[in-house]
Image (cartoon, rainbow, N blue to C red):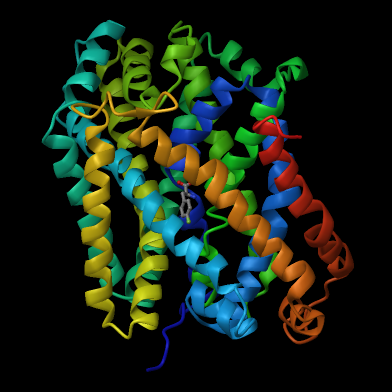
Length: 455
Ligand code: PFF
């Protein structure tokens, strides 16, 4: 059967950027930035993007485009009869794992969009009221699960339409929409009176706050945000055509992703400062954009209710869009793997992944309610999923990808892919190999071991 491809260069870039840009940028990045001290964290994060993220993204792109296969088969093709296929399989497993808890938060965004559209926040003034709404909703045994299922089904519907008519077409509509909404929100937020201390928090680094935990979090966030280390971009690149310039696409995706994360920071912290909200550490958690933000919107625009309404509706719509382009990419990793490896029809393979993710997702959703006492190392089921996937599975996957391309892969093949058979100039080729061989794997290893106090 002939494999589908993305129909255009723009489609390919937007699909990859759509995977990267998601709740990781708008929900997780501000949480991590807030918890880890603001501007200094951002600088460490940007260093991680350049030193670890870009080389690994390039590697995933070239492995996927060269082999034109799902992530596990890609390694089998390039390294037949070796254990390298396990790197691909770890990726499929991680994708399944992340989708299950990611879709819980994605589901919350639907609830909040509904609340915003039906103007339920109007008249609410105290933090306690917003907390009540969030706690009542997230601990409810039914609605978070309903929205989780709705979100995964939405993803499923796009996935079964296929690569060009589903993923690409929707990315082309959703990504520009997202960019416009987020730009409008930044302008509104930064220009509010009193926003400047929020802006300062993001711009004035305090390096005394940087420790091994901060560096691990920055690295985890970089992998998470760029969708790296689980073969997601490798799978998307398998739909790239031979003319796609891989270095340029890497740069474009990294710049778009980082810009959107920073813009999300510039929506949340200045708005919080303007509303005199005084973010405390308890405010900076998974509930940040569900308790703090709606409150901030009401306080900041309370005197002009229509603005508060528009701001909230736009924000939650934005989250749905961003989350959807990412859940599609996680789903695709597992769907393409099962379809190609077990010779299943795409629809059937997608359905299996949908059911499995819903099943696991239910436990994550309930960990805010009746399962909130089920804890390991003081983490709930949801926290365990998030922490293990972003701080361990993705970086470890990324480390092996770097070792694979840096040490194992045939250098001529590598060069051919990077230069598109000699037609694209790539003067940084030797530096890239050096970074992939020594810097990226050692840095990842040191950061993980350092965090466990082993280094
Ligand atoms: N990059 C996505 C985000 O920032 O929300 C999350 C993600 C998507 C992680 C796909 C991993 C992945 F493979």
